Amino acid sequence: MKPSFVIIENNALIEAGAILQNFVVIGKDGSQKAKRRTRIGEGTRVLTGAIVYNGCDIGRHCLIADGASVRENCTVGDHTVIGRHVCIENNTRIGSHVLIETQTHVTGNMIIEDYVFLGGNVTTTNDRLMGHPIKFRTRLREKIKLVGPIIKRGARIGSASCILPGVTVGEEAVVGAGAVVTKDVPPFTVVVGVPAREVKKVEEYELLQI
Image (tube, rainbow, N blue to C red; front, side, top):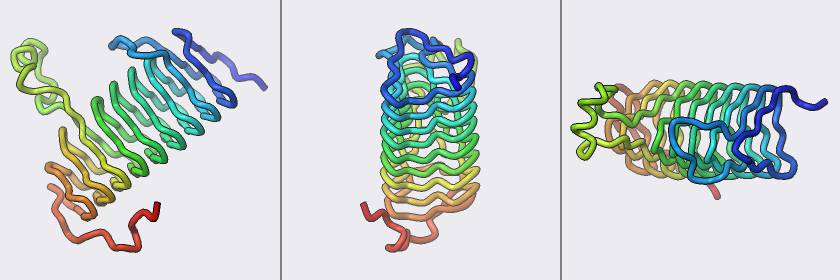
């Protein structure tokens, strides 16, 4: 059965074997100018109600689940899963073999490297001004910019945790569920709590063997 009400805009490229389910929108215009033609890679599935904005490049054999939103000029590597109702904001780069679970917010200007795990309802932030009026923000635009976190290769972020602007979570580090990360997390380190604090090193058996 053919899907219903699929919209493809701005000459978006849909590669062989890609599947678009009902009420999907590909190539939608947003608030930022597109840097490239939107591409949905070979074998990628975009499920019911998902929206991929203009200027996005989505890799091969990915899954973008029901109701997810990928804003302008994002890139997603191969074999990555974006869960139900995940929101990915502008200009974010996501690697390959990444798993982002349901209802997580991935802020703009963020980098997520390969093999990262983000649990459900994770919140990432990029705005130290926290939404001050535009006039005030304009005066400070050279001093304070929107800078998202960097999540390094193989890091794991527990459900309902919050990562503050500009923070780097090191390679294969673990952030416990519900933690608030206010400063950089060293590689291979486990942090928990509010604010997050180091409690131990990641066990050797937990490390990626890739």
